Length: 398
Image (cartoon, rainbow, N blue to C red; front, side):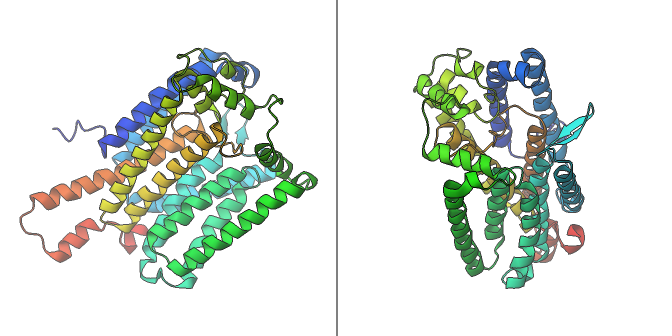
């Protein structure tokens, strides 16, 4: 009877973190949505807040539903979701709608958000299927192909998301046990390419009139040489942080949040600091660190490689995105456009984060069930235990 009432399956600490971040999100979005609701969304603040509340509730329901599924089913689903995501990304490029797949009066969807989760699960499946040949250079190259395809489709419209996806998946390759020498060589190559890319953006970015290159160059140059007299989103965010100090000015007292169009998205942490102080940012970072710690703990305790990599990859994605957003808010990185997971105004991103949380909890729930069976069983032979614990054999992953 107790099991039927166990709605929140999986790791209880992760549910607590999700609840706390969601509450912070509702308060922060309610405080910051005003200008954007009127000028950008052509609506009222209360209506947009209610929409965000709906996304938060929907994300929670998705997470709860997915957490009760057997996570080996995600292997086959990831193939379909990845193909759909790639197709949607191609359509977005052809239609020229930047990063959005738009059907007027029907849906406004950001395919890159779904591609993040789909690629992580798909890559975990590929690594698990090739576990016997992970040390071979050919396997390393094959695992890079889907990563590069998705990143090349995402990067033209959203450089930071492309970098985030690549970093997450490349870390997953390390967790998965690929050839270490090739992995480190690849990392050094990536660092070299990144350095050359930043130098090109800094010195020649304004002259390269291709896609969003001038925008990337301007953001990078503004970060290196900020103009304090220019009324920009990043300058107002810095002023909000400075005004907030350590203890803040009180919830609902923001000044800069009512002047910024992205106060509810990219720079929501700056407004949280303005109202609740730097101590609130420290607490929020602690919640993300706790979230990542729990994910790594679940991953290391997982009995199968597939489930372990899903949790490690999704946890890494959420933590890295949070670190990037926090760094931008306090001026440690140039503007990236990355939102703060589970806190920034929701839509496609919030729903996909709910999906990611549900997948993590499905793995955690399955691990608990297997550990409970192992604890109650008096005698378990080595062969049956392997069969029960390793749910992602070749047939199930194909």
